[in-house]
Image (cartoon, rainbow, N blue to C red):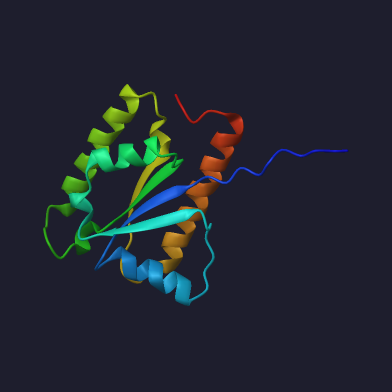
Length: 141
């Protein structure tokens, strides 16, 4: 009997923003644009309100990657959203390093409300990267 190794299916937690990136993700579904089913979304008001502890908690709970679908310059709440969200990623990368978690497991991109194809492209690419890393066993640094 030939046995094959189980397929590696990375789980990705996506933080999306209620007014900007979440509509793009919804539109991806309406347009039947396919991305991995193991990508789960949590909507937040603004990407700058994400806490590094939330991201670290996702890793502790077994998520292979975290993707921040950031507001970017379209943020309705603050002109400084891009800067603040970047600071969150920087702080989280520091925490990840302390825990020997590979920094490539956290990605961020600005996703506008009609950027469905861009979102799907980012998630597919991230999924492929995580699949490769998971198969090699190099999730940690």
